[in-house]
Image 1 (cartoon, rainbow over the protein chains, first blue to last red):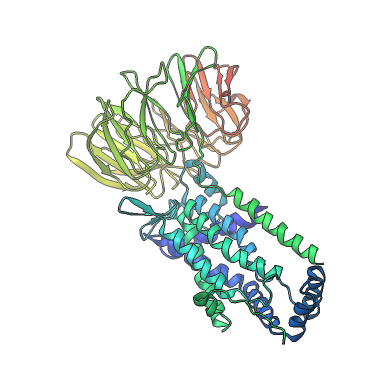
Image 2 (cartoon, each protein chain N blue to C red):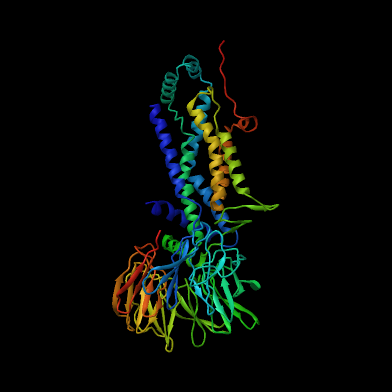
Length: 261
Length: 357
């Protein structure tokens, strides 16, 4: 199932793009970039719902009824949560809409990782698996073995640059940074520091850059290229809606506070 | 309602963690390499190289004594005339080592660590010189003490196969679709020959030149001067090294076809025989029988007309080329109940070997 619906289509798509691009030096890197753009286009509706969900959450922070329940049930967390859920339901808001697209990325990431490993075929066994994976229309005899070089990287191996005797994982740093930027821009402001969904979003904003940075540090650098391009496209997509929260990026996450008059 | 949504979130988070756990850092996996002398079989199978007693099928030693997560061994170990067993690591570190076949201890004070890539190919030893092809695309030339003799020669593409020689020239295939010919007298390299597809198997040396199969599904005949021609075809990729027996060239393809080509006439001796599955391993001729191992895990003995004499269900998948030692034929299946088995010419199993944990 995983093989048929994830690995095989992904591997063939990568090979097809690689072939179209002329399978020369650096081509596999460009194939991954184009692949990422395609994935972004396919998941556009999902990301749009993320933007919409985040926007609704932001608007809610200034809603009169929302502010009132924060004040009214400040000391009764259970009741506050019930009331919040009621408002979410009444207004058709999914408080986890901003998390789901991030989680759905995982099968894509793992599928891409396995596809890259298979396409680059480091061993005869990998090569044999690749032979079984390609669709009949692919002219695979001509294109394998794939050229794994892209800029200074070997896309099949973790990346680092030697600086003064230290192996600096530049891509891992860029991945963590761009993931952080993306999460900061999309993070809605919260009116209540105890709001659990806001806390969850905030936690994701901390953990995701670290987790993806760790992936980039340990796995094939082709994955890191995917992360970076995906993050940058995410920022562009969000900024294009005009809802990017730039103040989060430069001024830190601000909490909307309510005061008794 | 809230509990339900949080449960959903945590389930998704858990799923993400489980999925991410499936994608560990790349670990090179491959089928085993196999060699043998009169007394022992040598099996390179992941973390260890094993020496197995040919009489009993018991482990004699393993190298290294303790598994090193950075090293793995899949190339066919090579025995030298002066009693060394040579093999390189295909792990994240890739030392090229010399092992004492009797004790399993290292011979050289320092292993050769000059290559940038993994060792998938076995070296060729000729006139006290080791010619070692690496996946970094370089051919390394070492003396029998592991010292580099000359600068490595860049051939390009990953080199997965053992060089072949007629004593005057080296023939080396590459995954970059080319066969490289090097003049051992030092007059330089002859222009590489485009095979039309990657060539993971070695060339085989015949009376007047070399024969090589490739993913172009062709067998090419190459003369020392570099002239070449396609002399036979197959239905699918040719993976293994062809086998020459007198005037007959045996080769196999991934469709499972076994071919017997009469080199004198250029005609096939039989219509392609298809035992029961794709064939990656090279055919082996021993005595009057042609041995073929398939990906379906079967081991066949055929007569010279391609008729099946006997068939054994070994299990797993067989990609490693069978090896002869004395009157036994060794088979190393991949992902099977055992890692090595010995059969006699009648197909009777003499022993099996499974490494102790």
